[in-house]
Structures are given as structure tokens and as C-alpha cells.
Length: 252
Length: 210
Image (cartoon, rainbow over the protein chains, first blue to last red):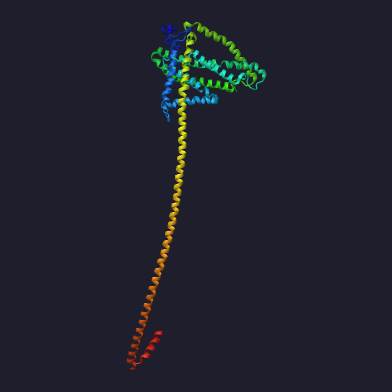
């Protein structure tokens, strides 16, 4: 991919996919595995540092009457706490730290990615799919641990005639197994598409000269939209995790 | 699963049809999608998504996701959440505490108010009692003084009446004497007879009585 950066397409000045390239910063090789510290790793580190810094600074005062920063921190807390309470129920309390971390990780990863020339690690299918598959496996394990073989009833709804099992069970099975795919695809595709769109418009700005102010104005709007998408996708990712957790615990 | 179910048609037959369509659709489009993806990936070095072509970075990305998310989870579970929860709890405690203190203070204030009302009531009762006593005392005093004054006045009136009566008697006596002497001198001048004093006084008495 590196050669593309030097020689972009004949007509278009920007390669919109260049931003997704993983570039090693510090090569680390463990056995056969390439665990290099890359721009992706760097932005993951920046993300968690930003999260911890934000919460340390905002909750440092532990003021009884919260200031602005502390209000925002408490808003995060209460939003996710309510989400877990409403979607998972009281049993979800023990998973709250995980859900909260997940939300912050995706939220900060997405929003920091909107900063120009940063790197969005959530725009990589490996990362989102890994998170989704971990959630999927964990939810399935929780489901079987709680209900034993009864968890298999998930795949056949209550009260349906028995003969429909032939059709319903495969459908349910497919819809269940496609959860990690849809969960990871949604986040990955949203983040990638938005970033490509931004780059394409940036290319228009360069191509159109003075008239480039028009795509530039559009770019401002799209950036705002991307910020919204970044927050929304983090929220969706988290709330779907809560829904899956609810299914595993309560089973319907 | 209810959430997902509601998206499907509810009738089993339609459900079956929808399921069949979905399966067929997946079977038909799935391979071509995969093919397209692999084609793009196969064309790798010319273009395509780095997400799909840079497969050698997958292990590293997963590794760093585990490391960073693990660190974040630790920080959230051990530091961030206890801090926020602690602050919220502290605030709730403080609010509860303040509320109960306010309640207590309100109770105290009510007590003070009640005491004050009570005191006011007592003072009012005392005052009216005092007033009543004073009025009675004044009334008694006034009655006494009136009586004394009346007595004095009555005595004075009696004395004065006596004096008047005496003066009147005296005046009457004098009148008789004057009338007698006038009568004597008139009789003497008219008929040259000097009547006896006894007769004159008798006549005068008769006139005066008359």
C-alpha cells in the first residue's frame, strides 16, 4: 500500500483508503506473531489515556456540587448504568464495569478518530470483530451457565407449532450466529464509510481550486455528522451488547 | 428473542416463506460477496481495503486491543467507577443528611413556634386577668369614693338646708316683727289707736299663715 501514497490515482489527488493503513511504529515480533506497536496501537493507547485522564481530572475534585467536567463524567456513568438496568436488569450489575469500559473504549476510539490525521482503530474489522466475538462467546457462555441445555430453547420460540421447528430453528440459529458479524460489521462499516466520505470530499476540495469552498463547507457538515455517527455507533454497540446479555440471562 | 422476532411476519407460513427467502438470498449472494471480497483482497497490492489486505497485522491489532482494553477495564473497575459511585453515594448521603437535619430543624422551629404561641396565649390571659382585676379594683375604689363623696355631700346638703331653714325662720321672725310694727304704726296713724302687741302678732300670724 505504501507505494500508493507516493503515487495516487492519475486524476484523484487523495487516496481515501490510505488512512486505514496500519503502519508499524515499533516492530515487535513474538515467535511467528507480528505484535508490532503500530499507529492503531498508538491510538488505542491514546484512547485509554484520554479516558483515564478525563475521568481523573473530572472526578478528581469529588465535589458534592459537580462542575461541568464532573457532570459529564456522571452523565456517562448514569447513562450506562440506566442502560444496563433497563436492558439487562439487576443481574446486569456485575457486568456493568465491562459494559462501561466497552462504551468508553468505542466512544473515545470513534470520536478521537474524527480528529484529522488521527487513526480510527474501530474502522478495522479485525478489532470490531474481535470485540464482537468476545462478547458473543461470553454471552453464550453466560447463557449456558445460567440455563444449561435449556438455553437451546432460545432457538425455538414458545408456543409455535412443533412442525415449524424445521424452519424456525435454522433461522434462529442463523440469526443468533450472525450476531457477532452484524455487531462488528455495523461499527466497522459505519466508521470506515464516514472516513472514506471525508477523504473523498477532501479530494474534491483539492481538485476544484477556488470552487473547493463548496465541498469544504460540505466537509464541515459531514464532520459534524461523523461525530454524531461516532457517538451513536458507540451507543448502539453497547446497547446491543446489553440486549444480548439480557437474552442470555432472561431468555424470554 | 422477542425484539428480533417482532421484525418477522407472525404467521408461520409467511414466517417460513421469509426464512426460506433469507436462506436462499444468503446462499445466492454469499459466495459472490466472498468472491468479490477475495478478488479485491487478491488484487491486494494494487488497492483494496487495508482492513482486508493487511492480514499480517491482525494478530497485532487483536493483541493491542486485549492489552489496552484490559488496562482500561482495570482502570474503570478499580478506580473510575468506585470514584464516581463514591461521589454519587456521598452526595446522596449528604442530601439525605441535610434533609433529615432540615426536618429536625423544622421540628425544632415548630416547637419554638408552638412554645411562643403558648407563651403568647398565657401572657394574653394574664394580661386580661390583670386588666379585669384592675378594673374591678378601680370600680370598687370608685364606688367607695362615690359613697364617701355622696355622704359628704349629703351632710353638707343637710347642714345647708338647716342653715337655710334657720335663716328662713329668722327672716320670717323678722318679717313678723316688721309687719307688727308696721301694723302698729299704721293703725296708730289711721285711727290713733295703738293696738296691743299680742293682738297685732296674732293678726300678723294669721296673715302669714293665711
